[in-house]
Length: 114
Length: 112
Image 1 (cartoon, rainbow over the protein chains, first blue to last red):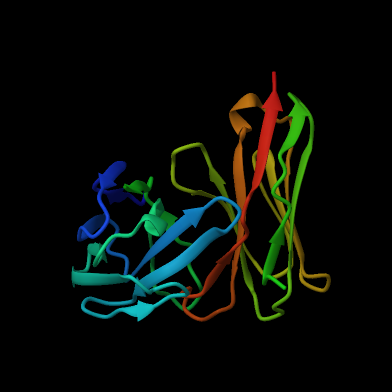
Image 2 (spheres, each protein chain N blue to C red):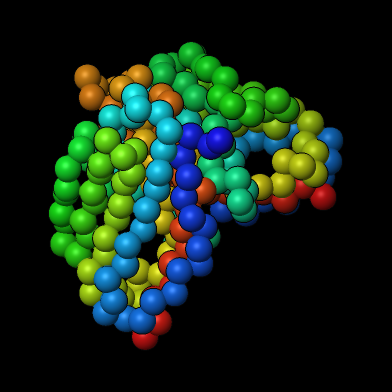
């Protein structure tokens, strides 16, 4: 089974702090994704990466950056946390093949910015 | 108009009922269709994955895709209280899986 592990289940930070969310997958997947999930808005893609050191903006990249130094690890960085970044953050990974492969998710990090 | 529309519910049914969950979409390029189940305080878990039109069955779950109507369904037979969760539909269009669009989810309650 695919295992996507997010380092923290719950995190409380203060406005203006730099926040790091870590994600590790154990299936040698090429693609990794960061989403945020808010009630009524569903999943919104922040950034994704299709290879080491590669990154692409998703639909809502403002206020975020990412880092992928190793294939199995994808980090989301909130440069200066703000209260409107309070949310559930989900990491996912998928394999690159001729056919689209489904994404597999971690259990999420519930982040509160005070 | 959203690319994917999904009724948020909540949908409440008695144990043993047949549940029908649905999504409509607007982009005819979508070819891969997925259903995820998300329990409270957990990440989405892949339930069903289908390509193009047709039916796919897995135990008590059946996924149905009608590309001509741009309509997908998930049926749950003999529903159990453990099926209580939020169900997300998702679809992608052959772009290497990078662009997957998710529905907002339908919250399902199965009462014992």
